[in-house]
Structures are given as C-alpha cells and as structure tokens.
Length: 432
Picture 1 (tube, rainbow, N blue to C red):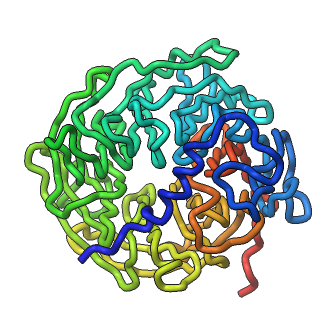
Picture 2 (tube, rainbow, N blue to C red):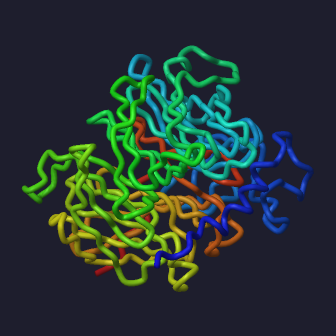
C-alpha cells in the first residue's frame, strides 16, 4: 500500500494563505501564518544585505548574501509555492516566475538588488482561491503553468510579452491545454519539446493520466496530447532527459526518472505511445518519495523524501542513488542534514546541489564526494528563523540556473528572495 501523501497536512494551511486578501494584514495577524510566526513574513522589502556574522538582516546564513526580498503582498497577494526562471535571449534580462496561490507573478531581476514586479497571470480556473499548488516551467520563451485546481489545465504564456514592461499588469494566457483538470506538477524536456504533466486529474470524469501525461509542445502555443504512462500509478515529480550516462543500452534515449510516492521509477519515453518501465526501486525508510535530480554526468540521482522527517524522526535526509545501471539503481548513501526540516525541491548545477528545505530555507551541498554517497553542506540561507521544525512552512523551491549566478527562492509565507553565493564564506571543510 502506498503511504498517505503528506500534502494532505499541508493543504489546510495553504488554503488559509490562498484566501488571504492581498492588502497588508494588521501587525501580528499575517494571513496564513500561525500567530507565533507572525514576524516571519518579514519587512516590506530588503535590498543588498550581505551575510555578516551569520545573519542577513534577521535571516541566519552562511556563504549566501541577500540581494533583495519582496513580500507576497507586493507580488499580487496570496502565498507562495513553486518558482522558475527565464532569461530573455534577445535582451539578456533575467526574470523570476513566481508560483503563487492565486496565479503566477513575473519579476524582472536583471538588477537583483532592485527587482521589478511586472504583474500577475491569474489562475485559469474560476476556483482560483482554492489553489494550493502551482508549478511552472519554460520552453522556447513560453511559460507552462499547472495547478491543483479543478479545470485549470495547462496555461501557456509568451514570456517575450514582458519585454520593455516597467509597470505591473494583469496578464492573460496565450494558449490553454484543457485535457487534464488539476495537476500537481509539470516537467519539460527542452531538448525534445515535450511537457510531462504529473498527478493530473480528470476532466468531467473522463481522461486524465496520474502518471506521465505527455504533451507535444513543439509548437509552443499549440500543445497536443502525445501519450500516457501510469503503469506504476501516480507520479509526483520527474526529470526527463536525453540520457548521456554510462548505461550504453539507453544512450540517446529519452528517459524519465520519476518520484512515485514510494519508489524511484525509471521509464523510457522515447516512444510516447509505447513507453517502457526500465526499473522500479524502493529504499529503506521510504515515507513519501517526492522529487530528485540527476548529476550532470547522469551517473547519480539525488532524491528527497518528504515524509521521512515526520514519519521516521530523522534529520533532513537526501538519498544518493547510483543510476549508472538504469535497470538496477543502487542506494549508495544517505546524507543527514543538521536540522529536522522537511526537504522539498532540489536542483543540481555543476558540483553543487541546491535544496529548498522548508523551515531550514535554502541549503547548498558540495557533491564532489558523491561517488562515495557523501554530500557536504557548504552554505545556507534560512528564511524561516523561528525554528527548523519538520513542518510545511518556509522555502518551497529555488532556481539556480541564471548565468548571472543569482539564485531565486520562494517562501510560502514570505515572498521572493534573490540571493548570491559567496564561496569565500562557505562553511569550511572539517579537518581530516
């Protein structure tokens, strides 16, 4: 039997945030935040606050400077969830695409100390106030947005419309894919031009594909259904790549590594009409297999389990898999963090893993020892200074792929943080 989703415990809290008015709340009564955590929403804005003596303003940190902070009240109201980024290939401007309970906010962060809010793309569905989860990814200068709202479908927004905009606007979608109702997540393989809608619901009681709902987005504004894989049931998150790892059998095939609630399930999706399950791998201590990411050489996969900190009483745990044999992945290590915060979304760039770990904020790990199953924390920025308890509050996700080196972080109760790593201030390696 699959474990119960920890998101059920989160839904009620996020519903309060979703129903919050966009106007600033009275002191001590910030919507969606428990009374004892009222100060965690933070100040009106912050700009250019270096991490000094372990703090940037009130936020504990090491090796990461705070470039700016904007609360959700200044980003169209509501609360926060997913985040992604886009760089305009024509102008070089960098943008944060901020998932919120009431839509998707667009922020020009080209000058990260002085970000510019450009407005909100509201939810597609009439039930927008019921939204707790939203996810956004980018392909060919278009944003693709899904949400756990009945009839939301997948929104498509042409990001080039943001060029030259300097004042906030209420945006409208450019296209809409209606063939799934709600969805928890969307992943995109930019090499192939396919989107993978995850955990999608039915539309008027028909259709739906709770695993990999595959969509051809080769024409960005004309998304077309391409296939479905749900042999292993519900897929919570995935990363789909053209495989260039050591397993010669799957070289240059399109492969998805799925977080399937209690397993890492790997699927060959080269043929969208006849996808093939390559392997299904459980692991000791599995509570809720949530999300993970491949190293750039496609040899290792870091996996987060969203339920083990509460269910097993462990510190933040990242599971290290050797996937050099895709038919038989091997768990080669588990990294226990310094806090009990619940891990959420992680991404890898070069030799660093960037984990948004709820109440512990952003934690950055050196993965150069990954062949031995080892990670080493080198930096952190804690946007939830009250505690590091295993609760669903704080940092939802991050995006570390801007060429400028800016990292963006979305806090559920807080807002948008733009950050920059300071390697000279990284946590020193312990003596041998």
